[in-house]
Image (cartoon, rainbow over all chains, first blue to last red; front, side):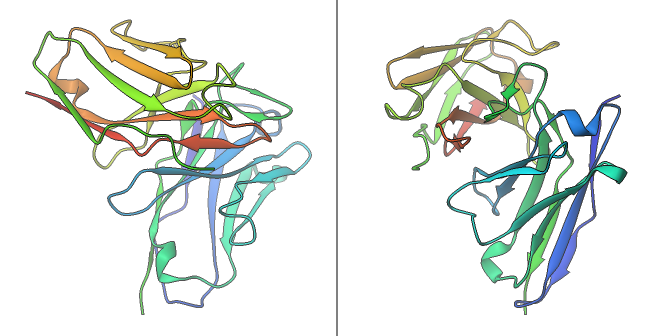
Length: 125
Length: 110
């Protein structure tokens, strides 16, 4: 079974750093893009960026460029989303997601078929 | 990139059909046949319902269909069922490897 399993909920203070993870299983991790999507409390979905673990090609949404870092460790089939200095406005659920067959090219992803369960990140002083 | 525009809410009775619109621009919806639709129940991860405008992933009911005209994409749900009550989001490829989501529509089954 193809699965994305995300790390657990986090509670942090403003200014702290954080790295959350998304582990893929049941498929060739290096052959599919992985994307990150933010959902702020009571709000809609926002595309943050994607990474191709095979060669670590990364594309960021202009809205998130410089605000977060996307990475992957293909040796353990895990993608990451990290912050160096958290803000209260980073409070949200973060989903990782993978396109299905035919839903991506070398240029990027067109749709996400497999989703992680989400990681709730709470930033509060 | 601005978010795609969706109605905040729609409603329908069981058995009826409803349509959710998704208005974009000539830079996203209008330029690509790459609109996807997601269903999200409270507290759950989104679920892909439609991709490439009108294709259904395996296991998705044919009660769900997608279409596009100009800069507007639409999701139609026919034979409305109680379990269809959820939030629905459209998403379009917008060039330069980017995606843009709509603001979401809450579907209420009366």
